[in-house]
Image 1 (tube, rainbow, N blue to C red):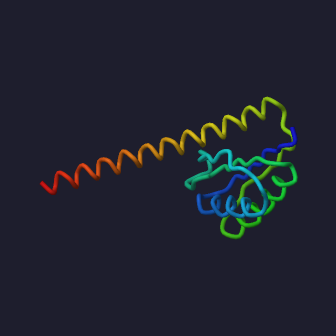
Image 2 (cartoon, one colour; image 1 turned 30 degrees about the vertical axis):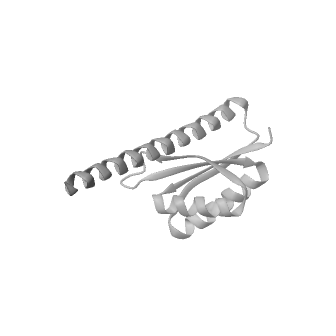
Image 3 (tube, rainbow, N blue to C red; image 1 turned 90 degrees about the vertical axis):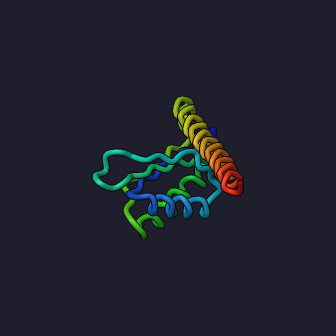
Amino acid sequence: MNKALGLIEALGLTTAVTALDAASKAADITLVGIEKIIGVGKAVGVNIQIAGEVAAVKAAVDAGVEAGNRVGTVFSSHVIPRPHDEVDALIAKFAKNLNKKEEIKEEKKKETKKEVKEIKEETKK
């Protein structure tokens, strides 16, 4: 496998989103996960997981860390080139979880729109 896993841990959502934006613009990578981290004091820690070709992930992580540190604090970052098959399975799990979260959000949006429509129809009567 020629893929790599890149990890960026940042303090706060703004820092994490800024890092992810820069990483995505710097190279052809795929977001496979984003998780809230517990245990960073009163602030929210965010871990970003990206995947792609080794050189692309290295460039993306470097760009993400640089951009994140301009607006906040990046705790750590790491690139795992050509991860072991078991780590590769973990990458797939991250991606699957991210997709599930997106599907749940879309379903909730649809339900909310339906409820709003029903309420509007009831108030017109």
